[in-house]
Length: 403
Ligand SMILES: Cc1ncc(COP(=O)(O)O)c(C=O)c1O
Image (cartoon, rainbow, N blue to C red):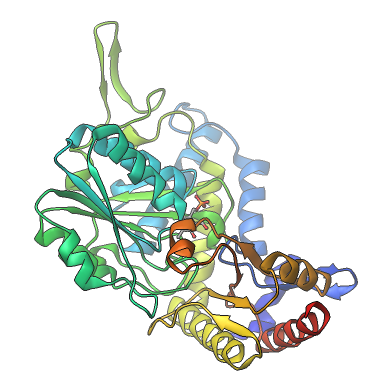
């Protein structure tokens, strides 16, 4: 097992002070921090190799193209996919929007789409809009009292007219680890596709899309130590090429004439225009970093930190934790009696503690819990137990000030 104290040296931002106090960064579900190794990969690309990809025959273009395609191989290996199944996008939101748009010509008003109520808006609204455009029915699966996807309800909602079931691998508010393999099974049994939002799941442990048996999988670089503005849409090869790309331009065409255009197969056919190749190179460096540390170890440490948070918050006066999923990672959300989450987050910031307050882009979930805002604390493997203790002390302090 790696030492958190040692690896913190790779993350210069963690040395920052806020108002003279050491930063305690507990907003990793929103964006994680970047290690020096990723910054160096980005710098090296810009400093020594920068040129457009797949378009030139000169040395720099060839080097950049090779680095991009190496990054695709790294991303594929990271999630157990084939390189040709990896489309680089600008992030999870972009991936889901592209996918939902591609479903339009596959659907009619008789069809339906099923999502869960825990979905982030990015895995909710694109599917809702798909239904609005096609006249299909939009179905939302509820959660159990513990904050887990109600699989019995899901089985009732998914039927022979369901075209796609979209679900998060890990919920961004409650931290629930969804049984995605089972959700894929339920989808496939009805003849539907299963699209998994891996934004919160991909950093925690080992993801194998073939084992998960999903058809599509999306994630973002900035939530897994990589740069912002890069992400991945994985699509099972034999399915991907039955969909028509939804973005058009350079790099994705085979022949173009006034009479019409033919497209390349995936992934090139889905990457119109100059891709974010430096971002992809940075993302691959982040994946190498995570792999080097040990993904099982990272998962174990993050689950331990979440357990520590959940136990400490349960014992804290005037605090209610949201959800009690049997398997939780990445995030714990809570409310404090008589204290608005925004006030709490603002005061915690004064103590150097960064947490998230608000709706967490999950209004349907919050509405189902009868809430408008919550506080969310989301640790990463580089957080220390001492930081969690200091967070508890900070919480006690702001409670005594605000109540
Ligand atoms: C579960 C989940 N899905 C999707 C997203 C959207 O990710 P991005 O903003 O990187 O596109 C997030 C971001 O918080 C998320 O937590």
